[in-house]
Image (cartoon, rainbow, N blue to C red; front, side, top):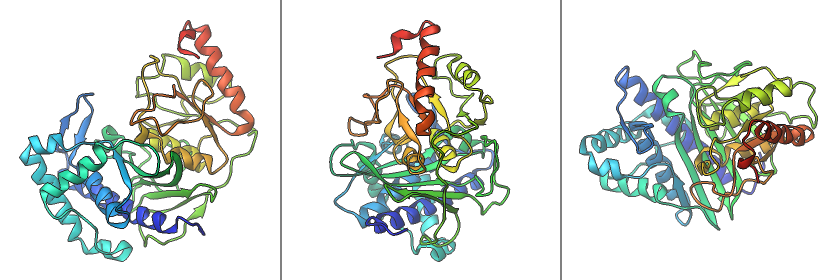
Amino acid sequence: MDSPHQHELQTAIAAVQRAAHLSKAVLAAAGDRVSHIAKDDHSPVTVADFAVQALLTAALTAAFPGDAFVGEETADDLRANPALLDRVWTVLKEVAADTDLAESDGAPQIPDSPERLCTLVDRAGLGVPGTGRVWVFDPIDGTQTFLRGEIYAINACLLVDGEQTVAVVGLPNLSPQATYPVTDQSVDPDPKGGSILYGVRGRGAFRRPLAGPAGLVGDRLPRHEGTPEKLRFVTSTAAGSSSPGVNEKVAARLGMEYPGNDLLGWVPRWATLAMGYANVTVWAYARRERQGKIWDHAGAMLLFEEVGGKVTDVDGKAPDLKVGRKMVSNYGWVAAPPGIHGRVLETVREVLREGGQGHLLR
């Protein structure tokens, strides 16, 4: 890909490759005993979450020291739990010593001490988006599926003045040859398999194997037609934050198989849209005050836009990625090719009104 952001793209691909390698190694070493603690929202946080965020921040700080960072995790739990900090530090040292990574991207950049590790985690974990250059990370999207050895993602995005500019998504367990429907159980049987999706605004989106040098050119993902003949859905039947029954009713009215593709993590859902396994997704939170988190969407949704997709919220507004760590200016999501997006949007709004949930709309 010829792009003015080639350096950023190659650096991010190399970092995501290392992160994917690390995440697989943590899972393989833990077996049935994956270490985790509980966050305030009761979701599991693994050694891999902290180690991946530290690794991504270290690599991109070294390459772009003037950039800002936003990531999901803070180092509070690491500082409060010396055993957990030691485990994360040990994992990072093991990755740095792994000669298998030299073929793809040279010696991994890692923090030089546990204290520096915490500082790097916090550099992203306490960061907020805004103007200028901001890297956004989701170290492990789909932590529950990661713990089960299923589909999860590593998401990295460069925002420039709030605009998605560079996107790299690692899918360590999803084969480049996956077939419809893609679900959390669509695991690549090759332990060295997996995929990377990447894109730069205005330059298209691409898919390549996870393994291989960072400069390996992927296959350009085909663009979605303006008005597709067949609609395919991607949703999550496991995530419980969408208004009850909305997704099923929307799918039925639009003649889509339900659930179609079924993935817990938002990043794998956006990736599935980009790869063409699906061309429609909707999400209407059960409460208006629920908002998406920037790391679940930034970059991954750009990949869908780069294959011709249109993304708005349920009010028809474009994503606002400058307002904070939570996307407080947007309510829910509607994504589809441009020729059908308006129909999908109005169907979602009709279903909400008819179900007595019109108060959620603006």
